[in-house]
Length: 441
Image (cartoon, rainbow, N blue to C red; front, side, top):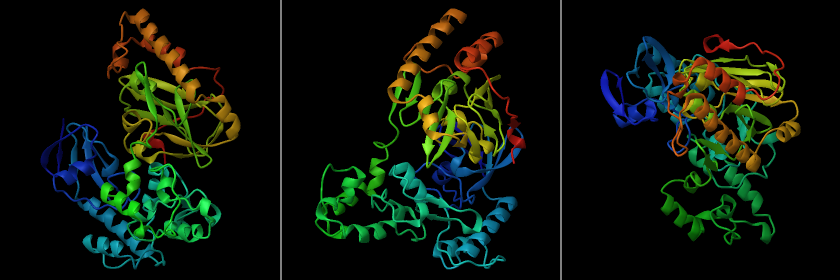
């Protein structure tokens, strides 16, 4: 169990819980808009920011994305936090002046009017619809379009989406009711010929085959009512675990089969024409908890095998190399606040950066996936096991994870050999300039 202090109260929580979840458990309400209990934390609305003091330093963190740690001190209601939340409430009031949830939130925070020019929108840009479509339904029919005040949620080129399965999960999680994707597609599907009038539960993957007999009036469907009664939430969340990334443990290490792998132990996942990058479980277990990083700036142009980032943990460092060429589009803001996310959830919240690739087909061909990735990791696991046995005399049991402090227990000379053997695959090209987290704008 983890013990820490929140609002002058000593509390305990399970490892992996977030500050937001623990606060709720102890009856402490933290304002929020983008949090949903059935989805991965996002930290986009910034309303749930709290002050966290760790090792004598106090910083602001989104409580929904910050995992609890021993001996941290959390404050959820300070003058600094109140000022920040009031500013966010004013901006939301300017964007959505007639939306009830925004008006109620502003009133709760003591904001009656906004100083900013008002818009006529009913979308607060919380991103819940985008995330449920992409991460839970595994469809990705909608996304954010444009930037700044012109940002909105929509489909590519604002055309009707052929990817949408009509599950209605986007409407279900929308806090303002502005999302109408399900209804718009239902109107379109009613004009389809009989063999194409697929039941939405068939599109979701619950049943193998069923044509809709009710002209897409789901409220008249016995199956629809039964599913809602069974789920007690939107049925798409029943698929959450079965649709989560297929994974397997090979030797000591976990592999996810929904992404590509570089032999230098960086994973790559394709998302809407971009490539998201992070460290694999091999790196996580060997290094242990990540305490700091050095990263490239956004807009840096990479070539394959350029230096990509450097991670620090357990008094050791690892320099990682680019699996593909392209331009860096963004860096995960959550790891800037909390580098340990990189090791805590390397395949999920701990992703590191996104690259706009120079050549997607070439990048995909040169990376490992599926069976080839599995065979490669099997060889890497065996080679690592034999190397450690020969180098240190330690016979690591295959049925257990690597000890958390492993990196600290091997000599610096052995660590250099590990880096050379397992993380450098080709001759390095360019030494891209890297910066400490505190220097990243």
